[in-house]
Image (cartoon, rainbow, N blue to C red; front, top):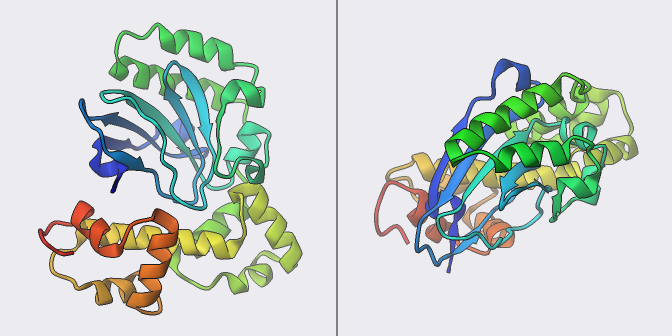
Length: 255
């Protein structure tokens, strides 16, 4: 059985420094436990990340379904999660070209990649690498364009659970233009982003609840009912809601 990444080791998020807040939602690190043999599931969240792992910089594109990367036990992955609307500009690549992929940053063609990687390889430990990683991003951010504001509006609508059907009127664009913008900035359409963010609301509830039954969690997260939640969660993660609740929740035996 797969284990969600948050349970497979120590995962920590950090607020980005002021110079990066326009471009990145958070910085993070994830250290897999020594001896961990579980299959680790990275579930979709609607974001694109830049990673430092195994001695190279890698772009983790947006996912439609869970990914199961091979991560060495004891390894530390350092990451920066792009803010909505920032990744396509930073990478000079539409995110529709990166869906479900992990691509070396060098293959995308950023001219500063080899210098960044050389400096990060010289770091004595993960903590020093994380500090330098943030500083290198701050330097690179000075030359970057402002993230696309319409992407932030689209993401906020999907994240809030409000129907995305009103977005064309709100943004002053046609349905076709909205679809193109969504694929450019998120890799898929607004409806898929809406599904993924609803799934993330479910995960957040699982982390916070104590005795809430699954049927109530389904409604709180925005699913039509528990059966709808079970289907969606299985498609996006390969796991059942009960298994996820057992992995993330505060109670025992909820399956």
